[in-house]
Amino acid sequence: MPSPIAKNTAMQHLKYLTGYSPTLQEKVKKLIVDEELGPYLAKRYPNTHDVQTDRALYAYCADLKREHLRNGAQIDKVTYDSKLDVVRHALGLHTSISRVQGGKLKAKKEIRIAALFKDAAPEFLKMIVVHELAHLKESDHNKAFYRLCEFMQPGYHQIEFDLRLHLTYRDLKKNQR
Image (cartoon, rainbow, N blue to C red; front, side, top):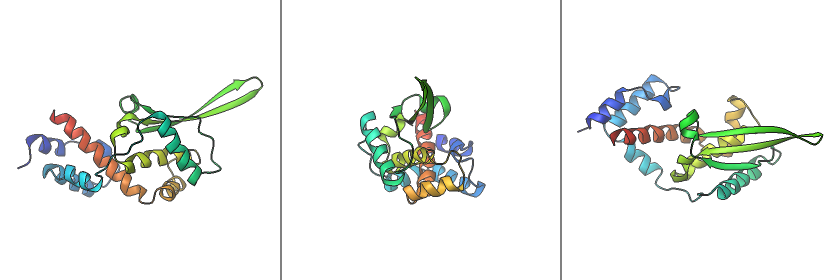
């Protein structure tokens, strides 16, 4: 028997799935009502990664960049950001900060990953990192951008969808407390 909270939440707006079809959203609502969303995610993504420090995250990003974007811009800083999820509802952020030093213009590229990904499945961390690295080559979310994401992480679109399911489930659990 589904809990009243699950029924109520399933009927509410699914904020992470707004770009998906109403039919797909209804299927997700059914998973929530039937309390099958958590087991689905646990079965599909049973592990967590061991990239826990900013230094390890920088190395992880640098390895992915070296493997897929050899000619891409140099990354100067990569960090987990505990404020990212709350402030902008962003999961990752790439920035380019330009400064004049002497007579030269220097640009620093930074990537910030929401701290909630410290305890996530390795596929989810990779998806966010791939997304932010793809912005080094493609600034807009266009076809070329998503082709690059798919190249760097085959199955990117399914993992992105499952990440949205994970975030929905995370919010469900928060509301049950």
